[in-house]
Length: 109
Image: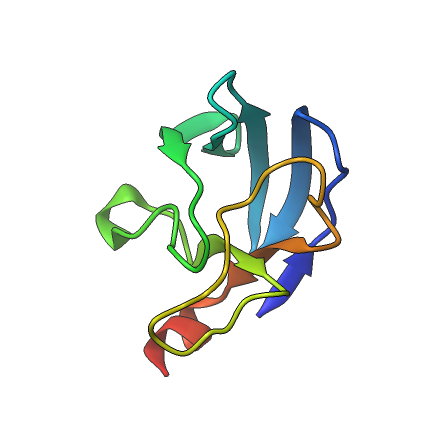
């Protein structure tokens, strides 16, 4: 698992080389306080408008062509079911709520 650095802002664009892919993530919080994510590889959309939830993978399906997956982790919650973590929002992005890349190897284990 790799932590992707993000800012604690309501809307941002993050680029990173992950699993050999040139990735771009658009993270944006709507008026309902829910955080959403768009995933692009080489400027092509993989999946858009996905609500970010604690410990829930964003891409989920390998047929979309993304190597690995991304998710948020609430550092103040638990990772064992039932999770006590909260869904990500600002304030707290990048500190309490970490944006994580899961490699293909991470997903196998």
